[in-house]
Length: 167
Image (tube, rainbow, N blue to C red; front, side):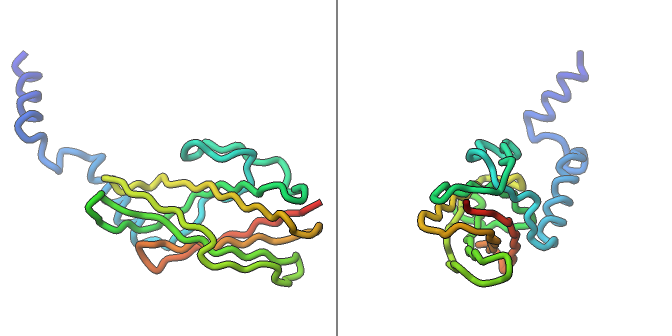
């Protein structure tokens, strides 16, 4: 019985030495690699409805939309940074929008189309975004949606393309 009490006492008065926590060491190494990596988009897709959590999406079976139907997009960025603030760590993105025809003719361009921002006491690496784009008067045809994701905590950017059709 002395051993469990000794462990409980050690945790109560200051815990175990940092070197005794291999998960914390692994997390520190992961955060260091994360910060050194370029920003990328791990997943980006049209979805049936907005996701309620990280990885909790329902991918849309088709990229064909009716005129005026909203384009719902789920994305998972990786390699973004954090800004230290009074609330902990602030992080997020601005999103630039580009839509063109399949042969490269620009139809719509808007910088800072959307902003996604939040804060956390930790440095989360499981951020996801739901984006909704409604093209009420867009013509019928085949198009290419390009979204450029700009990190608010660094000069990192990432982009992705999703072909879609309006019928």
